[in-house]
Amino acid sequence: MRWAGEVVRRSENCTIRLLVFRDGGSGAARQSVINAFKELGVDGENIERFGMVALDLPPTADLVKVHKLLNHGVAREWWDREEGCITAQWPPTSVG
Image 1 (cartoon, rainbow, N blue to C red):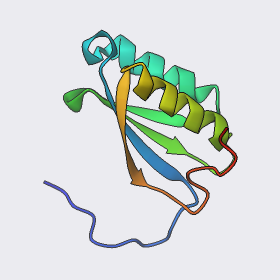
Image 2 (cartoon, one colour):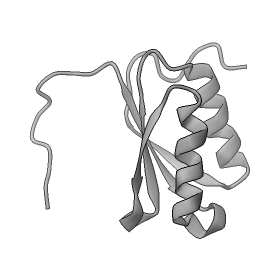
Image 3 (spheres, rainbow, N blue to C red):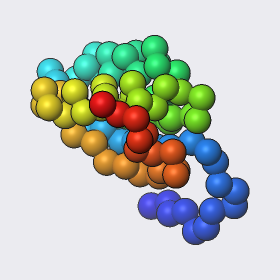
């Protein structure tokens, strides 16, 4: 088991983890989540072992649209989310 001991240098990126429920958390469902967020300038990693996706949100991504999509997916029960590492820019203040 590996654990992080300390932060060497802070990034301006945020990390959001999604537990994917849609289609039983299948590989195709996880990849479709990554693809949807990629259109908003967000990279993602498929974590097959846990049926999860980890999203890496750079400060250049449209955080308002990302936040709306995250909330939409939670409301539709496609996924649940956890904020792993966030910055002062998260959550965006202009979400409407």
